[in-house]
Image (cartoon, rainbow, N blue to C red; front, side, top):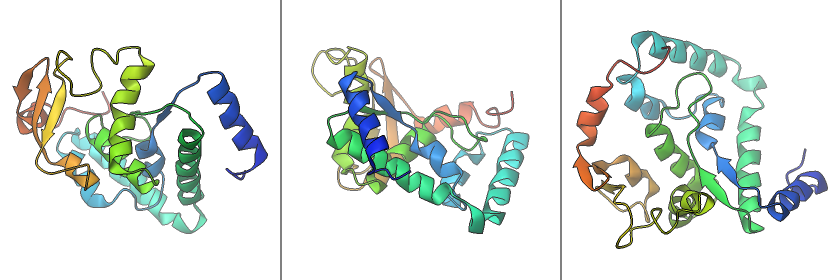
Length: 201
């Protein structure tokens, strides 16, 4: 179907009229596109996965790449990106989450970072992508007074990055410190704590 056609545009209007929010899960969509995400993105998660989980992921990724010529997924990813842009443009509330489903390559944390990058690829500004992934979720939960933005008296759950993701969204991958309930954690130690434990359990 054409995203700009009456059926999908009518659906968008109906969702908004009924106050239905949508969660963007572009990282899962991307995982079915041949040779996406770039392999260096996936190598970041390799050490966290059980060896068997990585082997299963790599086998499926290779099978998807083998059928690249016949794949409809590149088109579907672009259509989903356009759908999300149109939904927001018309006033819809878009949130973001990695939805770690699919065949094993989308992990929480890593998948959330990739989702931000894909929102920017979809046409949102880095600031809009960050807003979608933070404040919009708090708003939908009715918790915007407690978290979702960096404001005095709100919960101190945030990440400090080495860079400026408002200018270069890929800087979200350069995590320096993770704060939960106001306590700072070393991201490398967090990743080390799950090394070889994720997947197929």
